[in-house]
Image (cartoon, rainbow, N blue to C red):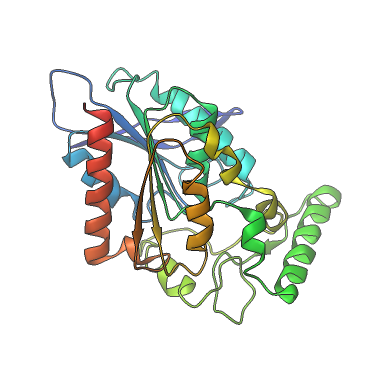
Length: 295
């Protein structure tokens, strides 16, 4: 396997990308485009999935959103669904220029927040061949029902504070990305802190915070609305015990996709990144991608 640095630009800002190439073959391989979940970076367990796909003969293009990880841009960890979708579209266009891969066989792989992004991008870009949507965020409005009125009030107040501060004082107000159940954080269910921090590499400059304006945007983000417009095959992997994204909401989204396979698992939101469950999930996804891209 060879890993090639391969950056691209979005709105004039340099975004970091890495092209994982399988052993040399006579024909350019199909390619899987991958990016990270909420407030995360590409190094958060995604290379492990990428390596599994490369072992099956596929190339992988893994990238960091603008303002995240190795990509340029300020403020850091700026979570914005609309911006993220633009970065996905820019990454796909970049991949289409790469001579090393087959630009006619491009799949998307997203997890958690980016599991929703890939549904939106596939609905917009009709040249996508397949999609893997893993533990996907599907509906911001539905997600609101899992939070208490007190939490919603704090989220709105923090979001408005960041919005006004950024406009008036050109400064950002931050909130924790992940925290204990009794603390205020974007992700604060019992499984969130140990599950999330377990995928963060030991040596990292990542900070557990994001601009609070994301809390105003998340409820309006509804990838499920795009589901009927997807024309390529889709695999949806989700946890029946997920404390962040209700399995019922994911199933409703699955029912709206024309060509879909679903893989419900008896897990929470973060279990799929670890040990035996990771191996099982990666194999399911690799088989799906092989079937759709290499036939």
